[in-house]
Amino acid sequence: MSVPQPPQDAPAPPPSNPSPPTAPPPDCGPVRPPGTNPFSIASLICGIVAPCGAGLFSVVFGIIALVQVRKSGQRGKRMAIAGLVITGVWVLVPVTGGIFALLNSDPLRDDTGEIVRDGSVSMDELAPGDCIKELGPGVSFRVPVVPCAELHEGEVYAVFDLTADGGWPGEETVAADAQTSCVDRLADYARTGYDDSDMGIFYYHPTSSSWRGGDREVVCVAYFRDGERAGSIAG
Figure 1: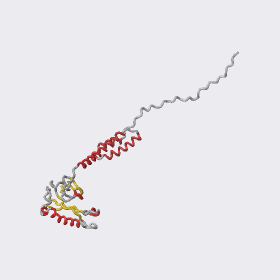
Figure 2: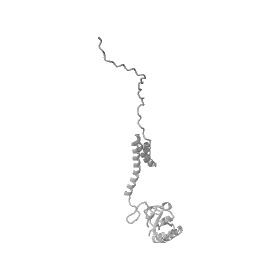
Figure 3: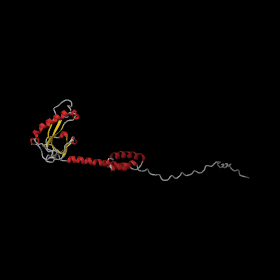
Figure 4: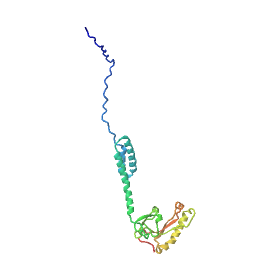
């Protein structure tokens, strides 16, 4: 007598369209690291040659490089910083040197107001007794001065203000008034200079633009037609 068997599930039919095996992803090779930012290189180079006028470019390129490096991950941050630092050094060295020289330089005048060393003064700082190293229109803003014992081309003997008020009276009027007053004052400062045929008169007077700003000052200078001299004409 046969033993009844439990019902068996029928085997599943094979798939009608089997999927092909999945291929592995292609080998793309190692990931290349980002390169050096070109603005970093430019900043460093310009910083090195900053004394030639490239300092501003170094600063601009350095800032651009730092911004781009932060966003892109490129190399060059240290180069950009180095360019900025070098540029700063080029700027600070002469400024520091100038401040140091100014703080440690001897005064131009002594306690009596007499010039005791070579230097330069502005027009409104000139005073009677100042000896001028060189005369001419090219030194009208900063005037080179020396002690009168050294060779010089002229000597200031009077400083005064014109009395004219109101608007600009004209170049000829101002020059004529300045010359007349300077001639009269020379005899009071130096009698021997007044009689010296090799001595002439040179003067600075207000211009139309400075007149509008309130300038009325005239500076009278005795100059030497035969060249430089040493010693003061006063007395």
